[in-house]
Image 1 (cartoon, rainbow, N blue to C red):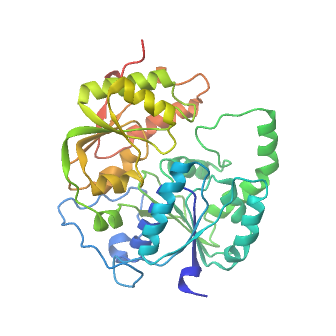
Image 2 (cartoon, rainbow, N blue to C red; image 1 turned 120 degrees about the vertical axis):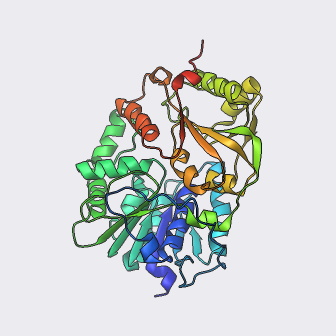
Image 3 (spheres, helix red, strand yellow; image 1 turned 90 degrees about the horizontal axis):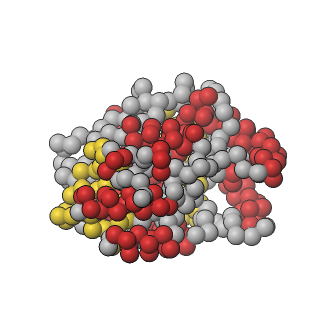
Length: 389
């Protein structure tokens, strides 16, 4: 078996692929510098240290270089995600990894064909890296797995909910998902054995090594290894960025997921634009064109649709001296990626009055937790973005 085939990674989003590259880079670094952490408190990067020099492309054994991985991309159907994934796949190949594009959606037979195509590799892999433990397809792939080591890399703030549910022994369920109708509940019941088996596989039990590679403020479970993702690869490969005089806003898909009312969101963006002199709006890849057009017309903001994850876009620059975001992954990752650049990352709290009638109670507490646990950020009160009307 080739070295790249011994480590098999499954990713479904551009951010997951970025974090596999970060994990591979950290895996090749000095264990004394990037070993497992105790107590679940991610170590902050040394802000006085010089930026590490860019390493040569390709796998190698020296500290800080890539640990070769075979990466299987399971792309979603939306064009923005697919475009970013193709760009990230090209970068991954340039780093010496192998990338396989496997369609698993878009047709009734696609999931079964993908499972049949990947089953042999899954059984042979000694180490499996996954980016989305909530993904039903990923959970199905874990059924035949015999790997002695499982690694979960960040899928953004969802990692916080994954760790909490795993610790409580609960079924794995996305934080923003409501109960749904009868058909949805029947499907959940039918799928429960697969989900339960995946949860047990990801729970340390002494038979396999389980590692979580994260930028999020989480505590490890007994027997689990926790490794900090401080975006060392991103800092080594890109930047430092040129800073502009203005403020950049970071968009969110909270409207698209049914958590935040669209009119309240528009009012919040308008208020932040006026208060902070924002000029650009970095759209989330899931934001609808209609919503972005409305935002641009109401605020005058330049809408930017990034072709790579925001951590790379910001690190390459140009980027505003202040970056304002609603509670999201970037309030945890950008302070790492932009360490030492002089950029201030600010987070605007979500007022409970902005939430839709279908938003769950868990959504309220989850968003508050994302804000409260962010490090090295400036906190903006919800009053800075008043409700519509």
